[in-house]
Image (cartoon, rainbow, N blue to C red; front, side):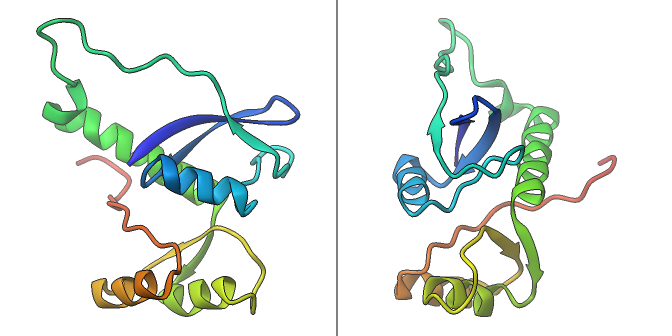
Length: 137
């Protein structure tokens, strides 16, 4: 997963998580991203400082479970704020969106690994996200 700070044409900043930079480009080109503040679909990456470790440092999140949990909770919050929850109907709804039978929008929900693989084979953009429970762990 890759994290970007995004900006809309009205200069609202927000975060986005993507499988890779190519996935981000596909989402922008298809106008599937929208600003959570004004709903603008004119989205671009905001300038960001690179995450470069100083000599001898390791990435904290990779070895710190608390930092990893914080990151995953932030990702969950972003997804919940910008996508529609469709529950166990995820695969069916993803297909409808892909084939133009439903409104184009970001969705999240549950599906089996087999069904996710079938969606990917059909060319339906899909990503598996580690979904952790809120609250103390």
